[in-house]
Image (cartoon, rainbow, N blue to C red; front, top):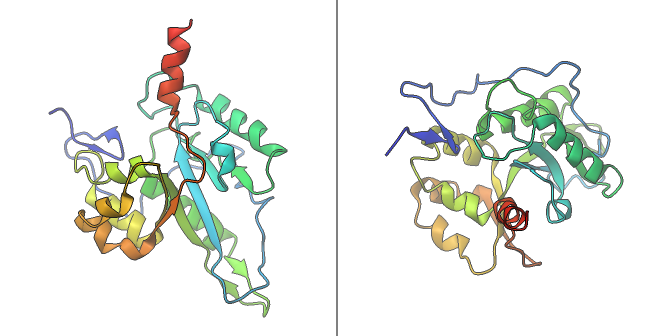
Length: 232
Protein backbone atom coordinates (compact mmCIF):
# COMPACT_ATOMS: atom_id res chain seq x y z
CA UNK A 1 0.00 0.00 0.00
CA UNK A 2 3.03 2.32 0.39
CA UNK A 3 3.54 5.07 2.92
CA UNK A 4 0.54 6.70 4.61
CA UNK A 5 -0.01 10.22 3.34
CA UNK A 6 -1.71 13.29 4.68
CA UNK A 7 -3.01 16.17 2.60
CA UNK A 8 -1.76 14.40 -0.51
CA UNK A 9 1.86 14.19 0.65
CA UNK A 10 3.73 11.04 1.88
CA UNK A 11 4.09 11.03 5.65
CA UNK A 12 6.91 9.08 7.21
CA UNK A 13 6.13 6.62 10.02
CA UNK A 14 6.17 8.42 13.36
CA UNK A 15 5.43 11.85 11.85
CA UNK A 16 3.80 14.23 14.29
CA UNK A 17 0.05 14.83 13.83
CA UNK A 18 -1.25 18.35 13.34
CA UNK A 19 -0.98 20.69 16.31
CA UNK A 20 -1.92 24.35 16.61
CA UNK A 21 1.78 25.14 17.14
CA UNK A 22 2.68 23.90 13.66
CA UNK A 23 4.00 26.87 11.68
CA UNK A 24 6.37 27.66 8.87
CA UNK A 25 9.02 30.32 8.45
CA UNK A 26 8.36 33.78 6.98
CA UNK A 27 10.35 33.96 3.70
CA UNK A 28 13.02 36.72 3.54
CA UNK A 29 11.39 40.02 2.61
CA UNK A 30 7.89 38.55 2.88
CA UNK A 31 4.88 40.73 3.57
CA UNK A 32 1.27 39.62 3.64
CA UNK A 33 -0.76 41.24 0.82
CA UNK A 34 -3.78 43.29 1.93
CA UNK A 35 -3.90 46.02 -0.75
CA UNK A 36 -7.20 44.76 -2.22
CA UNK A 37 -8.75 43.83 1.11
CA UNK A 38 -11.34 46.07 2.75
CA UNK A 39 -10.20 47.10 6.22
CA UNK A 40 -13.69 48.02 7.45
CA UNK A 41 -17.32 47.12 6.75
CA UNK A 42 -20.45 49.26 6.82
CA UNK A 43 -22.99 46.52 7.59
CA UNK A 44 -22.37 45.11 11.06
CA UNK A 45 -25.03 42.43 10.53
CA UNK A 46 -22.74 40.58 8.11
CA UNK A 47 -19.76 38.32 8.72
CA UNK A 48 -16.45 39.34 7.13
CA UNK A 49 -15.23 36.46 4.99
CA UNK A 50 -12.00 35.57 3.20
CA UNK A 51 -11.61 32.61 0.83
CA UNK A 52 -8.26 30.83 0.48
CA UNK A 53 -7.56 28.69 -2.58
CA UNK A 54 -4.56 26.38 -2.18
CA UNK A 55 -3.23 24.70 -5.30
CA UNK A 56 -0.31 24.15 -7.64
CA UNK A 57 -1.20 26.94 -10.11
CA UNK A 58 1.09 25.34 -12.65
CA UNK A 59 -0.07 27.28 -14.58
CA UNK A 60 -2.78 29.67 -13.41
CA UNK A 61 -5.88 29.42 -15.64
CA UNK A 62 -8.82 31.57 -16.68
CA UNK A 63 -11.04 29.52 -14.37
CA UNK A 64 -8.80 30.43 -11.41
CA UNK A 65 -9.32 34.08 -12.29
CA UNK A 66 -13.09 33.66 -11.94
CA UNK A 67 -12.64 32.96 -8.22
CA UNK A 68 -12.20 35.48 -5.47
CA UNK A 69 -9.99 35.65 -2.39
CA UNK A 70 -6.38 34.61 -2.00
CA UNK A 71 -4.29 32.30 -4.19
CA UNK A 72 -1.84 30.26 -2.12
CA UNK A 73 0.45 28.26 -4.46
CA UNK A 74 2.07 25.16 -2.97
CA UNK A 75 5.80 25.00 -2.37
CA UNK A 76 8.33 23.17 -4.52
CA UNK A 77 8.16 20.32 -2.02
CA UNK A 78 4.67 19.37 -3.16
CA UNK A 79 5.24 16.08 -4.92
CA UNK A 80 3.71 16.67 -8.33
CA UNK A 81 5.39 15.80 -11.58
CA UNK A 82 6.05 18.76 -13.86
CA UNK A 83 5.51 21.38 -11.16
CA UNK A 84 7.04 24.70 -12.22
CA UNK A 85 9.38 26.41 -9.69
CA UNK A 86 7.51 28.25 -6.96
CA UNK A 87 8.97 31.67 -7.78
CA UNK A 88 7.66 31.38 -11.34
CA UNK A 89 4.21 30.14 -10.28
CA UNK A 90 3.86 32.96 -7.76
CA UNK A 91 4.89 35.53 -10.35
CA UNK A 92 2.50 34.08 -12.95
CA UNK A 93 -0.34 34.42 -10.45
CA UNK A 94 0.70 37.97 -9.57
CA UNK A 95 0.84 39.03 -13.22
CA UNK A 96 -2.53 37.41 -13.90
CA UNK A 97 -4.26 39.19 -11.01
CA UNK A 98 -2.54 42.58 -10.83
CA UNK A 99 -4.77 44.35 -13.34
CA UNK A 100 -7.47 41.81 -14.16
CA UNK A 101 -9.11 41.72 -10.74
CA UNK A 102 -9.97 44.04 -7.89
CA UNK A 103 -10.41 41.20 -5.42
CA UNK A 104 -7.82 38.48 -6.17
CA UNK A 105 -4.50 38.49 -4.32
CA UNK A 106 -1.53 36.12 -4.21
CA UNK A 107 0.12 35.11 -0.95
CA UNK A 108 3.62 33.68 -1.46
CA UNK A 109 4.08 32.42 2.12
CA UNK A 110 3.21 28.77 1.42
CA UNK A 111 5.04 28.67 -1.93
CA UNK A 112 8.34 29.92 -0.54
CA UNK A 113 8.51 27.68 2.53
CA UNK A 114 11.60 25.43 2.84
CA UNK A 115 9.32 22.42 3.39
CA UNK A 116 5.80 21.32 2.49
CA UNK A 117 3.07 22.96 4.58
CA UNK A 118 -0.21 21.14 5.12
CA UNK A 119 -3.46 22.95 4.40
CA UNK A 120 -4.30 23.20 8.11
CA UNK A 121 -1.04 25.07 8.73
CA UNK A 122 -1.64 27.38 5.76
CA UNK A 123 -5.08 28.35 7.09
CA UNK A 124 -3.53 29.03 10.50
CA UNK A 125 -1.10 31.38 8.75
CA UNK A 126 -3.99 33.32 7.19
CA UNK A 127 -5.76 33.47 10.54
CA UNK A 128 -2.65 34.87 12.20
CA UNK A 129 -2.22 37.52 9.50
CA UNK A 130 -5.88 38.57 9.21
CA UNK A 131 -7.11 38.24 12.77
CA UNK A 132 -3.85 38.46 14.66
CA UNK A 133 -1.60 41.00 12.96
CA UNK A 134 -4.36 42.95 11.18
CA UNK A 135 -6.79 42.63 14.09
CA UNK A 136 -9.82 41.51 12.11
CA UNK A 137 -12.40 43.74 10.41
CA UNK A 138 -13.33 47.16 11.75
CA UNK A 139 -17.08 47.74 12.25
CA UNK A 140 -18.93 51.07 11.96
CA UNK A 141 -18.87 51.54 15.75
CA UNK A 142 -15.09 51.12 15.86
CA UNK A 143 -15.22 47.60 17.29
CA UNK A 144 -13.51 44.75 15.44
CA UNK A 145 -14.87 41.42 14.31
CA UNK A 146 -12.98 38.22 13.54
CA UNK A 147 -12.70 37.45 9.83
CA UNK A 148 -14.03 34.03 8.90
CA UNK A 149 -11.59 32.07 6.74
CA UNK A 150 -12.86 29.38 4.39
CA UNK A 151 -10.90 26.96 2.24
CA UNK A 152 -12.10 27.24 -1.35
CA UNK A 153 -12.23 23.79 -2.90
CA UNK A 154 -13.64 21.76 -5.75
CA UNK A 155 -15.80 18.70 -5.26
CA UNK A 156 -12.86 16.43 -6.06
CA UNK A 157 -10.88 17.79 -3.09
CA UNK A 158 -13.82 17.24 -0.75
CA UNK A 159 -14.15 13.67 -1.99
CA UNK A 160 -10.45 13.10 -1.31
CA UNK A 161 -11.13 14.01 2.33
CA UNK A 162 -12.99 10.72 2.61
CA UNK A 163 -9.73 8.82 2.10
CA UNK A 164 -7.90 8.06 5.33
CA UNK A 165 -4.67 7.47 3.40
CA UNK A 166 -4.73 11.05 2.10
CA UNK A 167 -5.95 13.27 4.96
CA UNK A 168 -5.17 12.94 8.67
CA UNK A 169 -8.32 13.13 10.78
CA UNK A 170 -6.65 15.77 13.01
CA UNK A 171 -6.21 18.01 9.98
CA UNK A 172 -9.80 17.57 8.83
CA UNK A 173 -11.20 18.42 12.26
CA UNK A 174 -9.03 21.54 12.38
CA UNK A 175 -9.74 22.71 8.82
CA UNK A 176 -13.49 22.10 8.97
CA UNK A 177 -14.03 22.82 12.67
CA UNK A 178 -11.84 25.90 13.15
CA UNK A 179 -12.38 27.37 9.69
CA UNK A 180 -14.69 25.81 7.11
CA UNK A 181 -14.92 25.15 3.41
CA UNK A 182 -16.59 26.67 0.36
CA UNK A 183 -17.11 23.90 -2.19
CA UNK A 184 -17.64 24.50 -5.90
CA UNK A 185 -19.73 21.52 -6.98
CA UNK A 186 -18.78 20.18 -10.38
CA UNK A 187 -21.42 19.33 -12.94
CA UNK A 188 -22.56 15.72 -12.58
CA UNK A 189 -21.45 15.32 -8.96
CA UNK A 190 -23.44 15.28 -5.72
CA UNK A 191 -21.28 16.71 -2.96
CA UNK A 192 -24.03 16.56 -0.33
CA UNK A 193 -24.55 12.85 -0.85
CA UNK A 194 -20.87 12.35 -0.10
CA UNK A 195 -20.91 14.68 2.91
CA UNK A 196 -23.75 12.76 4.51
CA UNK A 197 -21.80 9.51 4.20
CA UNK A 198 -18.57 10.69 5.86
CA UNK A 199 -18.44 10.98 9.66
CA UNK A 200 -16.01 13.91 10.00
CA UNK A 201 -17.50 15.90 7.13
CA UNK A 202 -21.00 15.31 8.46
CA UNK A 203 -19.92 16.43 11.93
CA UNK A 204 -18.80 19.78 10.48
CA UNK A 205 -21.50 20.08 7.81
CA UNK A 206 -22.59 23.50 9.13
CA UNK A 207 -19.15 24.85 8.19
CA UNK A 208 -19.27 23.44 4.65
CA UNK A 209 -20.97 25.62 2.05
CA UNK A 210 -21.75 24.16 -1.37
CA UNK A 211 -22.33 26.30 -4.45
CA UNK A 212 -23.18 25.10 -7.94
CA UNK A 213 -20.64 25.66 -10.70
CA UNK A 214 -22.23 28.08 -13.15
CA UNK A 215 -19.74 27.65 -15.98
CA UNK A 216 -18.93 24.06 -16.91
CA UNK A 217 -15.24 23.20 -17.00
CA UNK A 218 -13.48 19.87 -16.53
CA UNK A 219 -10.04 20.78 -17.90
CA UNK A 220 -7.54 20.23 -15.11
CA UNK A 221 -3.83 21.10 -15.28
CA UNK A 222 -3.14 17.37 -15.61
CA UNK A 223 -5.29 17.19 -18.75
CA UNK A 224 -3.59 20.29 -20.16
CA UNK A 225 -0.20 18.68 -19.56
CA UNK A 226 -1.35 15.59 -21.44
CA UNK A 227 -2.58 17.61 -24.43
CA UNK A 228 0.65 19.60 -24.49
CA UNK A 229 2.69 16.39 -24.42
CA UNK A 230 0.59 14.81 -27.18
CA UNK A 231 1.18 17.70 -29.55
CA UNK A 232 4.87 18.32 -28.83
